[in-house]
Structures are given as C-alpha cells and as structure tokens.
Image (cartoon, rainbow, N blue to C red):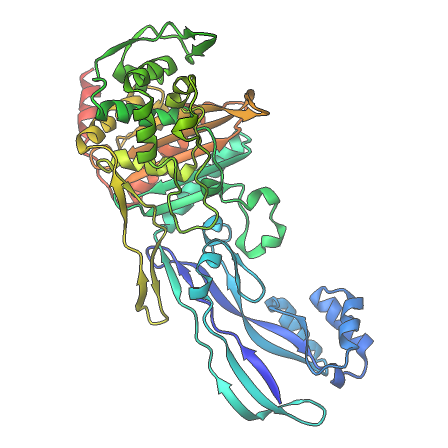
Length: 523
C-alpha cells in the first residue's frame, strides 16, 4: 500500500476591491524512486546541474533503499522544462501549490509569508493560517512487489478541502502610493527606518500600512534582518510634539483654556528649578492657538500645568496610549508607559510635549482619528471578511468603536486648531492645493544609554484630511533621518503627497478649499 497526501489549495488574500494580493500557482515538484535508478551518480549529476543542487547530497538521497524521496519541490518553469527533456528513469513529477505574491513587496509586512508546505509563518498568513490552509486529502494506492505505485488501483481517494480567502480593508492603490512616497523620503534622507499608516477615521479601516526597509514576498530568504519587523506596530518611541494633540484636546475638553488665552513663552528658554525648558525658536506672548500652531514646548507645558497631572494621565489612557490597538496583526506592542503612581515631579515638564511617554505609529494614527471622527476611539480593522471558494461570507469583522474620548465640539475645535498648524504653523509642508488638512509635526530626540541623543531623532507628522469631512487619518514616522531631521521637513511632505493622491483616487471633494482660495485671492 502507498499513501500520498493531497494538498489543499490555500485561500487567496484580496484587497478591499477584490484585487489579488496573495494567490497560489501550480508548480511541479520532483521526486525519485531510488530502487528504479540504475546509475545513481549519473542521475544525480543531471539533477544537480538542472536544479542547482549539491551533487553529493543528491547522490546520498538516490543511494537510499526507499521507494519515494523528494528531490526538489516547487520548481521554476525553466527547471521543470529542462528536467522533462532529460527524461530520467525513476524520476517523477507531482503538482503542488506554491504561494505567489503578484505585487512583490507590496504590503509585505501585512501579508507575511508561508513555508515550503504553505504553512503560515508571519503576518496574516500566520494569524489566519487555520482559515487559509484548508484540509488535506489522501490518495491510497496499491504497490507491486518492487514497491512501484500502481495508479490504476486506487483503494481510497479523499478530496482535499480548499482554504478560505481573506478580504482586507487595504486599498492596493493607496498602499502603492504610500509605499512609493515613503520610500522616496526614506531614500532621500538616509533613514534607518520609516512607517506610514493610512486609516479611515470613521470605521478604523486600514487603507495602507507600510514600513521601510521592506522585502520581496516571493524571495524572503534574501531579506535583511532589519526588514523583518512590522515597525508600525512593533516599534515604540517617544513621539515628541505630535503628542501635543493629547494635551491640547484634554485642555479644551476640560475647559481649562480658550483659543485666545495668552501664555508667556519666555523667549525660548524657561528655567524651572535646575531644569531649563527650550523652544525650537524663541517666542514671547502666544495665544493657546499659536502655542499649538508654532509648537511651543514652553507654552504647552504651561497649558498642562493648568490641566493638572491627573487629567493628563486620564486623557492619555482615553486616547489609547496604555493599550494595544487590537489590530489583527501579530506582534503588536502597547509601548512602555509608566503608571500614574510612578510619575515624578518633573513628569509634567516632559509628558505634555511627548517625552517620558512612548507610542507606536498605529497608536498615533488612531489618536488622530479620534479628532477626525468627532471624538470616538475606533479599533483599527485590517480584515473585512473571510469568504469561501464561492464567495460566500464565512466570517465578518464589523467596525468597532471602543469609547468616547472627547466631545464632538472639542473634536471640531481641535480640527480647526490643527488646520491652523498646517495653514500657517509648523506643518505648512503638508499643505495641499486642492484639499484642506489638519495635523501636527513632531521631532523627538532618541534616548540612548539613558540620555537624550543630540544626533539621532524620530521625525513624525500625524494629520487628517479634508477638514470639512475627514476621510483619512495618517501617521508618518521616520527613524533617524539625516541630515535633515525635523518632522515638518521630513514627514509632512510624505503626508501631503500620499493624502493628495489618495483623496483624488477616492474622488473626494473638499468644501474648505474654496473659502481658503477666495481669501488668498482677496489678499
């Protein structure tokens, strides 16, 4: 008796518009029956030459007293054609399914990878392997006295059950745009790493998520170690000034400040005990609106002093900085933030402006979505449905709202405040001609050896667009760009280019642009 497992067809992975991101191709694998091979050395030489194998290893396989042994699985078309021409006795072909990613590196950190047996190893391929892999079947056949398979005598035949397919929230057009623009910046500024998250703030749909360095999904054996991590959910860092949206939102929600309240920004240097707090450039008296638009550290800390540490901690938790977002991707981290009981007397000089606190790119995108979506925290969603071979829905993943964070009125005020930061503040390089946007820049010194580095920074920009009715919330985070390292210079242009093209792709119109253009013409 001879039994052979019949592999099921692994389910495909599609984007939100049913464009293929991962699929199976039929590939021929080659095996041998050593008992039928008279000249093992000559056969091994031919196999090794055509299949680029070690001859000694092949000779060893062909010298074993076995009726079945794998030589090489999932051959290229060229290898299969050449081997068929060789017509070697005792060498046979069997058709197997090989995972193929038609867009090469596109969405590589989302999709993940499989092994030679189509078992999920990383990403969604791993997390949803039980749905994708299907169930194997069996062919049980008779053998003759020499253990040759008698294929005409089939004792049992059990068909395999093919796997289900995933339908993602990803839009492959927006994913392409995001990866292209992120790479241009990553390459231009010689960055150590970079991430972008593009999210629908209404329902949490991830329209694009990308990292650099990345890798070719069809050739993962050649990827460098630094390309493996999904930085958008695996890496946490001190966010710097983008975190000021939390301070500002909390102050407005608690009625601590108004837009026109004034703060003395001490001409750029404020001594508090033994510590001196600096601004990037000196400012005198600024309104609260100007404190955020110009990203004054001193002004932000003074606002936070009116808010108080308990409220600061409260809104950090509400905005989700003490928890994972819950996105359906393996390896997400929550960051590393101290409990309120561990805050020191100097914590309120650092946390309100994004130091002594950590975040991931996906957490920052979700926090910005709160402001874009009238104050509600949504769970990021990357899978819409699981479907069977006939397209019938097996499982759905409805959008989930976690909680209310701020009132719709506060969210509206924050959208206006952050629009000012783009129109006339530190985020002007995020400004688009056809669409309005709001956002916040960030430039944070990295902590190295327990002290802040003066040479290594994380540059970031988080924003939303259009202001009239936000449909995109975006986080762009860049690790150690050089020689330029300011978020407004490095990350904001990525936001601009990605959002501009994405909104045009989505056929979005913006009511805020006409008043802005009319005002510009009057001047």
